[in-house]
Image (cartoon, rainbow, N blue to C red; front, side, top):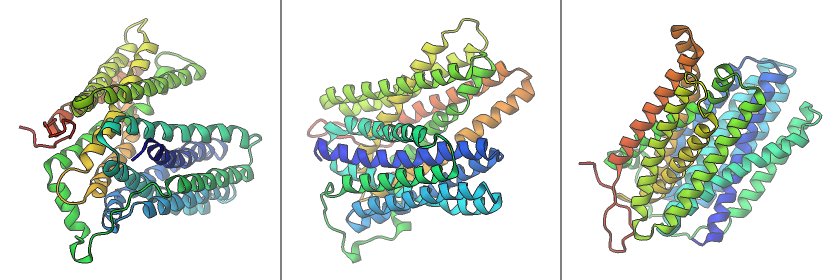
Length: 431
């Protein structure tokens, strides 16, 4: 796959990020602030969109046996866009009839989850089988960065389209974002895939058999556990960083927002480091990606230990700590995607889609649980310990422990194997 084709697949991910940002950020805020609904309402709807992504293995299997992944990507974009527009319409209905709007939001958020699963799984599987090993680190970085760009683009458009705010403006914005995402993503992916043809009907396995085959692969199973543990730690920190900085460090909302921006800048820097380091590694590329994955997890754990100290030690360099946390998070995240691209094509049979689906489902469950567990544990710790500083320190220590466990899992899941061309990634059971 050429660099132009890789960037075109990145545009698909940007389209996905644009719609997801609209649904999980903009609509979330409108429900909780403008409509004054309990936070559990948008929280449950977002959790539903993650729960639906348990279908990812089945969606990946469909693209495996169909011989082409492009229809699954375009179809997923259509479902995602329809779900995003319906979700905005449901919020407008909530303004007049809360229960009717919530009832409409349930299928809308379910459609969003199904669309994310179809687009994300099939596009990653396509990259796994058609991107050369030398280009995978940079491909993984571009894939992630363009998703962030899509979210940023939605935020920028929203700031203008929603001023002054009205429900009519919200639905109009949703139509612009979802329609633009579908068109841009569909045009970008059209013609990218090199088709190899569908397997003969007699050779097509059943989904249960294909899933069982993948789950029997010890490396695939352990990688799914690694994805779950690492993404649980990664997602858990997102909802507690700003509340911690406000409640314990007495920072203003503007200052806590600045911390989040600093963290995101660090994430981008970490991704750029991995892309550059992976591209320059040559024959040691697979070993380098493994090192970045483990190092990113270990570095994230160290920075979280620093955050635990920040509330207890006066003068702690919080900005430097948060920036380094972002670098470690970015390095871990994009190197894990790069490793995933290499691992997906290994093992028996044409199972790249099923493997991506299994790992995507593990990620979705972790993302759905992470915020809930972190916020719940912080409330519980505060009740038991009676001190916000100690409560948040306990939460950060728990997240650090998860990252250390993820680093150990990464070491056990895969190791490099010498291949004829010196660049293949071999999967073996840990000794």
